[in-house]
Image (cartoon, rainbow, N blue to C red; front, side, top):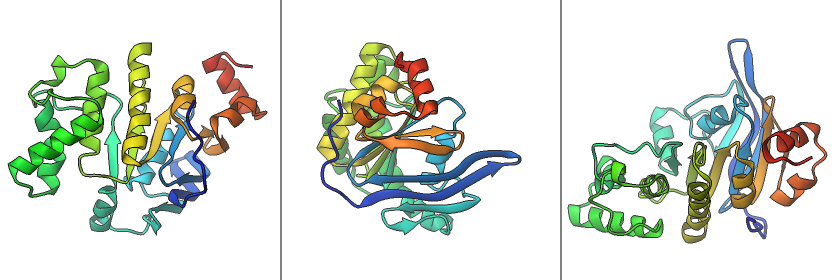
Amino acid sequence: MARSPGTARRPMIEIVGLHKSFGEHHVLRGIELEVPEGSTCVILGGSGSGKTVLMKHMIGLLKPDRGKVIVDGEDIVPLGPAELEQVRRKFGMVFQAAALFDSMTVYENVSFPLREHSKLPEEEVREVVRKKLGIVGLEGVEELYPADLSGGMRKRVGLARAIVLDPKIVLYDEPTTGLDPITTEYVDEMILDAKDKLGVTSVVISHDIASSFKVADNIAFLHEGRIVEQGPPDAFRRSENPALRRFLTTWFGRS
């Protein structure tokens, strides 16, 4: 079970009254969400519930129809492209399928953001990559290719790449989708380790109940465009919210 977030901390991400429509389709209908610094928040919901749309607002890839997206104390909604680029440097992203470049070695994959956003000499780049791979529990794999790695190892390489620029926030997009139980366990431990070792704020988009209950300090359940329940995992088990109870029954076998 995930640990309690403990004493109150300032919000690293705060969503206030967020609305977003695409034509006649109203996806987000007044989202209210707060993610404390250094905590792990899982945004839970079924397919098509708007989880990915919400995540895209967090990094400024989408502009809301109305509402605020406050990241590290700054409302990013009014910002222009250059300012948003600076905000995005605070984020690392772990994609659903790791999204590694198949033609690049592990070293080339992890060092890619450094080459794009810094002018470090090769010796320093190699040292940074080595340290980040060590943090995610991978050593001596720099010259391997993604095809040489297991699914769990590819996820960890993806995390190493996501943290190579020392972000304050790591976003995980459906990190356990399509994985077997053993690899899912591996990924869950990876998320917990990243929080413990790096102190990052983590937001996980998921529909995996068991994984969510393990890694989350807080869970926000997204249903019909609104956060209809939020709190620590233990509170979710006791919730009387009918939509959440149906979801738990369907996906986790709980009534």
